[in-house]
Length: 250
Image 1: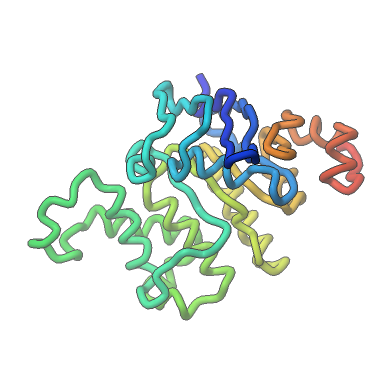
Image 2: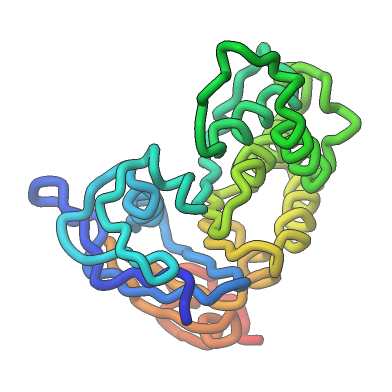
């Protein structure tokens, strides 16, 4: 059974339909990528999945439960975590403290917080340290977020999502703004997470998409115009011409 089912999902802003009748199915443990030009509706789709926007129509089913319209503050508690295109960190806090806050927010209750020191939350600290380890930042745990490179800040953003112990991980252009070397490092990180998490990835860099994806959906003007394996997408003449710059079929 699919972990995530998106059924005829649409979102209209007045006369503009940003997401138009999207239907997708994401299997547990897979890496599912969504590609398309700017304005295709990819990030709006993520905003619908994470409760930041209510859909105009359609359904979102996560692990057999209809979560359509669930508010954003409840989504993380259901086991869905997200990274963003733009880095969103606390620059004056250490890397560990940034991730600690994300791990703590995933907890079931804030009861007793006013009466306990943060170092008493051992399980939260352990989860935060594990997330930093997963992205290769353990040695910089006590540095301030503003003191690390942009590439490392993107890694930290990924650690924030992992600290929520997600069953579904939504990654919105994790390699945005990275140098070639930083991009390769991010690719290796995402590849290392594949199989441990169910991942839905938005990315413009085709070498990343074709190298890590199990299945790919292509969006154009809010609609899915093609869906399949990387090889099937590469063989699709319309997709190759419009999005892949004539990439040869593999």
